[in-house]
Image (cartoon, rainbow, N blue to C red; front, side, top):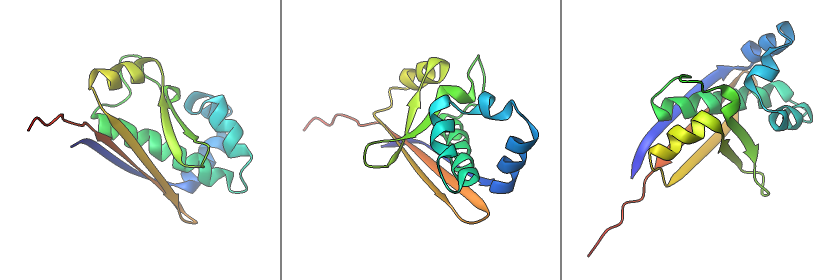
Length: 130
Protein backbone atom coordinates (compact mmCIF):
# COMPACT_ATOMS: atom_id res chain seq x y z
CA UNK A 1 0.00 0.00 0.00
CA UNK A 2 1.36 3.43 -0.93
CA UNK A 3 1.48 5.61 2.17
CA UNK A 4 3.42 8.58 0.81
CA UNK A 5 4.32 10.13 -2.51
CA UNK A 6 6.30 13.24 -3.34
CA UNK A 7 7.36 14.79 -6.61
CA UNK A 8 9.50 17.82 -7.29
CA UNK A 9 10.65 19.70 -10.39
CA UNK A 10 13.72 21.93 -10.32
CA UNK A 11 15.02 24.34 -12.94
CA UNK A 12 18.62 23.38 -13.57
CA UNK A 13 19.70 27.02 -13.96
CA UNK A 14 18.43 27.69 -10.42
CA UNK A 15 20.77 25.05 -8.98
CA UNK A 16 23.63 26.17 -11.22
CA UNK A 17 23.20 29.77 -10.00
CA UNK A 18 23.10 28.65 -6.37
CA UNK A 19 26.30 26.63 -6.79
CA UNK A 20 28.13 29.39 -8.65
CA UNK A 21 27.03 32.21 -6.34
CA UNK A 22 27.54 30.55 -2.95
CA UNK A 23 30.58 28.64 -1.79
CA UNK A 24 28.50 27.18 1.06
CA UNK A 25 25.56 25.86 -0.99
CA UNK A 26 27.10 22.51 -1.95
CA UNK A 27 28.33 21.76 1.56
CA UNK A 28 25.02 22.75 3.11
CA UNK A 29 22.82 20.68 0.80
CA UNK A 30 24.88 17.74 -0.48
CA UNK A 31 27.01 15.05 1.15
CA UNK A 32 30.62 14.48 0.14
CA UNK A 33 29.56 11.32 -1.73
CA UNK A 34 26.93 13.26 -3.71
CA UNK A 35 29.37 16.06 -4.54
CA UNK A 36 32.02 13.57 -5.67
CA UNK A 37 29.53 11.74 -7.90
CA UNK A 38 28.03 14.86 -9.48
CA UNK A 39 31.38 16.54 -10.12
CA UNK A 40 32.48 13.52 -12.18
CA UNK A 41 29.44 13.82 -14.44
CA UNK A 42 29.58 15.65 -17.77
CA UNK A 43 26.31 17.38 -16.92
CA UNK A 44 27.10 18.08 -13.27
CA UNK A 45 24.40 20.73 -12.79
CA UNK A 46 21.77 18.30 -14.07
CA UNK A 47 22.98 15.71 -11.55
CA UNK A 48 22.92 18.17 -8.66
CA UNK A 49 19.45 19.39 -9.68
CA UNK A 50 18.05 15.84 -9.86
CA UNK A 51 19.43 15.05 -6.39
CA UNK A 52 18.05 18.28 -4.99
CA UNK A 53 14.64 17.42 -6.48
CA UNK A 54 14.84 13.96 -4.85
CA UNK A 55 15.52 15.49 -1.44
CA UNK A 56 12.52 17.81 -1.85
CA UNK A 57 10.34 14.95 -3.11
CA UNK A 58 11.35 12.86 -0.09
CA UNK A 59 10.28 15.66 2.26
CA UNK A 60 6.95 15.98 0.44
CA UNK A 61 6.35 12.22 0.71
CA UNK A 62 7.16 12.49 4.40
CA UNK A 63 4.62 15.29 4.74
CA UNK A 64 7.08 17.50 6.60
CA UNK A 65 9.58 20.16 5.77
CA UNK A 66 13.04 20.48 7.19
CA UNK A 67 12.32 20.64 10.90
CA UNK A 68 13.47 19.48 14.30
CA UNK A 69 17.13 19.51 13.35
CA UNK A 70 16.73 17.70 10.03
CA UNK A 71 18.98 18.83 7.19
CA UNK A 72 19.25 18.17 3.47
CA UNK A 73 22.43 16.23 4.20
CA UNK A 74 20.36 13.73 6.25
CA UNK A 75 18.89 12.67 2.87
CA UNK A 76 21.58 11.26 0.58
CA UNK A 77 20.92 10.23 -3.03
CA UNK A 78 23.42 7.67 -4.28
CA UNK A 79 23.46 4.95 -6.90
CA UNK A 80 23.51 1.22 -6.22
CA UNK A 81 25.90 -1.13 -8.03
CA UNK A 82 23.55 -1.29 -11.02
CA UNK A 83 23.35 2.52 -11.27
CA UNK A 84 19.83 2.81 -9.86
CA UNK A 85 19.35 5.84 -7.59
CA UNK A 86 18.57 5.06 -3.97
CA UNK A 87 18.07 7.24 -0.90
CA UNK A 88 20.10 6.72 2.26
CA UNK A 89 18.89 8.40 5.42
CA UNK A 90 20.76 9.65 8.47
CA UNK A 91 20.10 11.33 11.79
CA UNK A 92 16.68 12.99 12.16
CA UNK A 93 15.45 11.95 8.69
CA UNK A 94 16.17 8.30 9.50
CA UNK A 95 14.54 8.61 12.92
CA UNK A 96 11.32 10.08 11.49
CA UNK A 97 11.25 7.65 8.57
CA UNK A 98 11.69 4.63 10.86
CA UNK A 99 8.88 5.82 13.11
CA UNK A 100 6.50 5.59 10.14
CA UNK A 101 7.25 1.86 9.69
CA UNK A 102 7.71 2.20 5.93
CA UNK A 103 8.53 -1.09 4.17
CA UNK A 104 9.95 0.32 0.94
CA UNK A 105 11.22 3.65 -0.39
CA UNK A 106 11.50 4.11 -4.17
CA UNK A 107 13.04 7.05 -6.00
CA UNK A 108 13.13 7.93 -9.68
CA UNK A 109 15.17 10.76 -11.23
CA UNK A 110 15.04 12.32 -14.68
CA UNK A 111 16.02 15.53 -16.43
CA UNK A 112 15.76 17.38 -19.70
CA UNK A 113 18.01 20.19 -20.87
CA UNK A 114 16.26 22.66 -18.55
CA UNK A 115 14.58 20.83 -15.65
CA UNK A 116 15.19 17.92 -13.31
CA UNK A 117 12.39 15.90 -11.74
CA UNK A 118 12.26 13.33 -8.96
CA UNK A 119 9.53 11.14 -7.57
CA UNK A 120 9.64 9.36 -4.20
CA UNK A 121 7.15 6.69 -3.11
CA UNK A 122 6.75 5.16 0.36
CA UNK A 123 5.11 1.75 0.66
CA UNK A 124 3.97 -0.21 3.67
CA UNK A 125 3.37 -3.91 3.24
CA UNK A 126 0.43 -5.14 5.23
CA UNK A 127 0.43 -8.77 6.31
CA UNK A 128 -2.75 -10.42 5.06
CA UNK A 129 -4.13 -13.40 6.99
CA UNK A 130 -6.34 -15.77 5.01
